[in-house]
Image 1 (tube, rainbow, N blue to C red):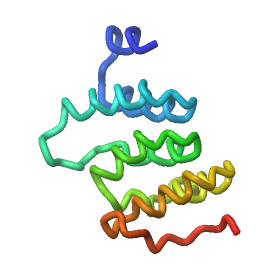
Image 2 (image 1 turned 180 degrees about the vertical axis):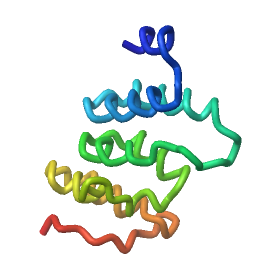
Image 3 (image 1 turned 180 degrees about the horizontal axis):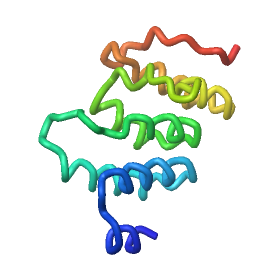
Length: 121
C-alpha cells in the first residue's frame, strides 16, 4: 500500500489520509512514516496544515508514539475535538486506563498533568 501511494499519488491530502487510516487501523510505524513524509514537505517549525486529527484514532488504538509525536508539534492537540471525539475520550472509550494516565501526563502544562475533562467515570 505504501509503495502504491508513493508511486501513484503523493499530494498532501492523500498523505494526510494515509496517516489517519494507518492510525485508525493500528499501524503505528506506517502512521509515523506518513508523518515523516508530511514533515519533509513543510517549512521547519510550521504547524500549518499538520494532520493533528490523527491523534484521535492513535489515542483510541494506543499508538502512543504517534500521539507523542503530534503533541510535540502542538500540545493543544490534546484538547482537539473532531466529530465529538477527543484523544482522551477515545482512550477512555477503549478502556485503556494506562493510556488515559499517559495522555493526562502529556498535557499542555509541560508534562505536569493536564486539566482535561474526561467523561470516562
